[in-house]
Image (cartoon, rainbow, N blue to C red; front, top):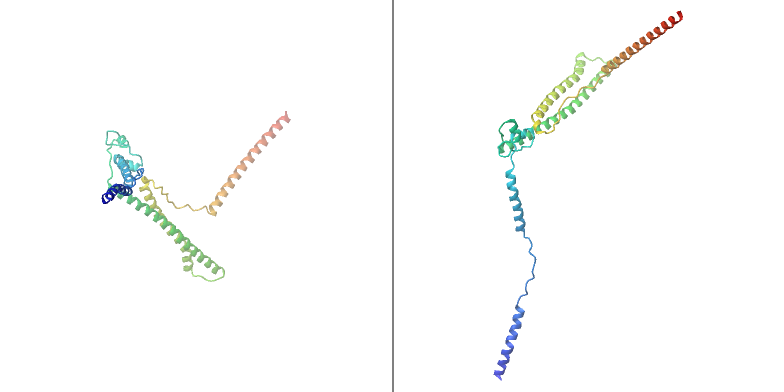
Length: 250
């Protein structure tokens, strides 16, 4: 009987173990489509940069003449000279990196100084307007006091009247000095084409005296034209009258 049981166990053993082994076997993984990793993306960008790097290195730097004239520096094939310098029969001169940095910095400093002078001119105009208003107020009070019969010393009257003239004179001198400096900066940086406007003091408007002179001249011209027309009409009348008299005499 024991031998029979052992034989049964032997028959059942491999089947059970086979079942257990079948359960333990892992499932086959599903096939997934390969995705681009971040490393691959970086490698592509690096490749693009590497491809662009030789193009940048092959670019010809602009020479001094072309930079000053703001024209494109076109190098000639097989020569170390650009087209503009070849026409001038001169060798190309190039800026160093330090020179480029100095030029950029100096341009910014000069333009900033121009705008500082412009702000200074505006502030000066505002202060002059205030001073003129105060001077005009003093002149009006002085005239009011004189109209009331108040005696005013001659020195005080001269001071008040001269104050306004001195304000205008100092304003014009200061503004001329500022505008000359601004125009010099504009001329020196004209090759950069920074479009800085030219600074000039506006001419004063025509006063009543000049307008009266203009109107008087116009009236004189009109009167002269009228006199000339009247003289021509009188001559024509005389000619007609003489012709009529001659016809009647005949």
